[in-house]
Length: 198
Image (tube, rainbow, N blue to C red; front, side, top):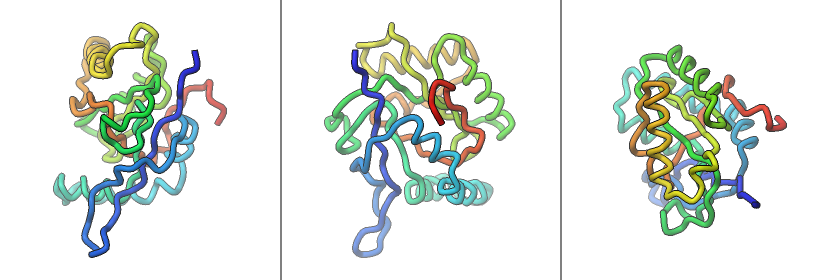
């Protein structure tokens, strides 16, 4: 079976002709691979916005932080290729799903969760990295064969239950949408599956 392993990448947000802040880019700019995301995440290109975001966390509101991410971070839709980031514009699904663990107490706790998930014995981890804020983890996994053909939301619930049962971890319920964006931060300790040539 030929399985598509490319997914959509969207560029940073933009400003309209009146120089007013506009919404994040909703049109896919390119399709890419797990290797490309890994190289991007460990690159200097991703470092500046990530450090700026983390520096503003103590004083900025959630809205200010969210606006900063929209304007400064590229993002991926790991579960599919989209013409536009809307459910009716899904071109093709991938075998990947991204789980979002938020609200950890520190970078140290995030690293501990990252190490545990990267070594999961039951699910194949493709990428695992600390979130833009520094207090969360993004876990990109290959869906087990038993989940092939299931609706995305059912796949998400299966993975959520796996996290809760094996690690006592809750995942962000907003990520149960196949169009969910995953902002790509800088993380020079990003885990990538050893099968990839990077």
